[in-house]
Image (cartoon, rainbow, N blue to C red; front, side, top):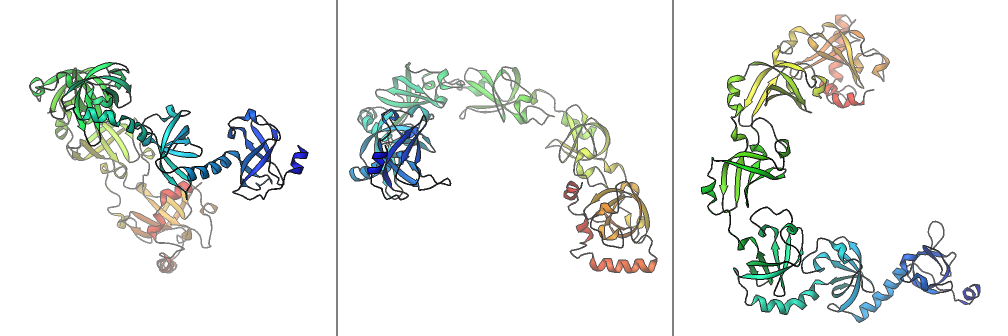
Length: 554
């Protein structure tokens, strides 16, 4: 080996070039190659078609991807060297339209990767006459392919198998398509089934038998109706001379159960059937073989807001329903389950008039409010904004718990949407209605610190009202943290410095609580000068973002 390397001329090593390397070591998964550089390179054994034929001292072509990685070793590839050499041969000897054998290597986005000497792209639409659902069945197989396009700049080749198949079948198609017509009954052999139908060989030409044309009844999968190798009589229901395609129907050879459907099931009549399928928007009920009706989720209950049909019915359940609409042309029957019962919402206006005092149990809590069960199947909703005159409730769980018994006032009834709006705060008078007379600017108040935020502290006053003491109004000297001076639960005296009934806000000052009238008047003048500055912000700014600040508060 040393003698071979000593007599071997040193090649000019450049990234992107192909050089001859010498095998210096063969391991289980790797082959060590000397390319005459500072260090040896390593190539995966998977890059060699016949690893058993290699031996120490063998010469192989390698492509230099990088002269040195971070460890000083070259990055090389045998596969890319072959690809580069074969590319030159293909470009020189082949052109668009040429036919070459190739082996399918694997799947890539949009199709398959095929080795025809170099890697070529086979789009999924060019694999067969019908785009296959499962591309895995082609991996490892060898076929002939036609070159569709060679892009020398990108070193990209696009190939087709479909064109070769279609050329072979073209002559057979011409003979059949010249004589076949819609309405013909033909005997065919089922070739294979897919998720959407079956391909039937009719006199050497494949026709598509779609799943919707297999039976007047429900077919879960084409394999439930036909099987490969089965001989069946089918009707030609479509002929496309331009595209040279035929469409076939099996159910068209049988009596259509939708004939005279309106006479058998008039609107308003009650039917008995079995639930055979459920979809997100409703349940399908089999009325007879080949005839199904749909119960939409909105027709399942007068009182429940049904989001999934499984909340009301189950597959296999036998039920009664009312026919509410029929379309024979579209073969659709709309059914209603709820119309087999009396509508309880017809009595809502009489039982729960606007302004009525009601009582019920909290059935469910959402991010925006709570649902109160007034009677079985009848709920009212209390929005967070109608829970308290004074508290800024961001989460209904702060105010109510599931199972609580609560009193409320009926605010609004939407009969069409079947909604009742309730309010708790309307049980009491709005304390903000006469706030200016109760909390005049300059009034001394006493309260308890309930919350501390980065910009101040909230103090609970009478009637569950809260006032804000901005950080600048706590003590005379400047402080960085409110918690260094105040704590939750502490009782403080403060003076009212701002009242805004429109925004429902009270501004307080602890440091001004002991000021005389003259000092307080001076403080108010200074407060008015700076209240809109960046340091203090407006009183509105003090209150904005309360929820976010609370989340950041320890």
